[in-house]
Image 1 (cartoon, rainbow, N blue to C red):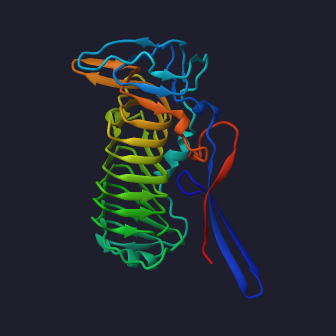
Image 2: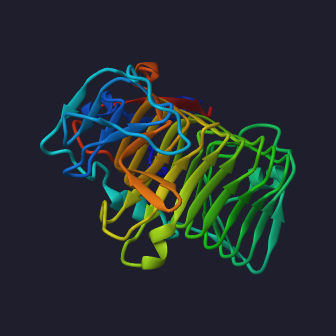
Length: 357
C-alpha cells in the first residue's frame, strides 16, 4: 500500500524472459456520494444564500432548506436546486478509517536505509540512482534531469524541511516523510510521489502534480496549481491537541482532479475549527470530504460530504449555510475513484498499471 492507493506487484519469468508490473487500485464511491451535498451533523436545517447552484440531491437530517439573506450577497435564485432535498435518519459523521492516515505519519524503516547527516541538495537525476535514505537535516531538490521514469519505489526520511525548487521536474516513484515544512515552489512538475509531514505543505502557482498524495497534520495551501487525476490532498486532525483546532486546507485558484479530505480522530468535535476552504476561483473534479468544517465557494463537479458548512462575515458565523456553493453531481466522471479507506462494500478498480520491464 502506498498512501491511500493499494498496490500489487506482479512478476513473471519464462526461461530468459521476465516481466514486472505494478498495479495501483482505488475504490468506487460509496452510495452516499451519489448525492451532490451531504451534511452529516445532526438536527440541521440547511440554509441557502448567494449565487448557489446545486445539481443533484441534498442529503441532511432535514427534508427542507430555508432560503435566507445575508448583507452584501445576492438573493438565491428560486431554482437553485436541480434535484431533491432528502432527510436521512442516520447519516454517518465518519466514513473513513482515520487510522490509515494516522499510520502514514509514523515512519518505520523497513529494510536498509543509508543515513546522511546534515542538509542535502539533490537533482532528479541523482534521485534516480538512490536507494532508501534518511537525511537528518533539510532536503532541497532542484533541476530537471532524470532521462526516464524510475519505477522502483524510493523512500526518503527528512529530519528538517523539504524544498522542491522552482521549475523542478520529478518523475521518480517515491515516498517522502518529513518532520518539518514542505515547500513546493512555482512551476514544479511532480508525478508518482507521496509526501507526508507533521508540518505545513505549500504548493506554488503554475505547479502540476499527478499521481501525487499530500498528507499534513497542520496545513495544505495551494495557489494557482493544477492537480491531475488521481490526486489526494489530506489533512489529519488529532483532537487531543487543541493547537490543531484551527488547522486548515486552502485551495486558491486551483484545479483539483481527485479528493480533498479533512479527517479527524473524532469527527465534529465541539471547539474544533479546522476546515477545508475552496475559493470562488477553484474547481474540483471529484470529492470534498470533511469530518469537520468546509467553506466552499468554488465549482465542485462531483460530491461534497461535510459535517458542517462554515461561513464568516464579521461579526457573524454562519453554520450550514450554502453560500455561493456550486456542486454538480452529474458532472462527476463515472470512472472517478475514491481513496482506499472508506467504509462500505469493497469494489475496486484499476487506477493505473506500470510495466517496469
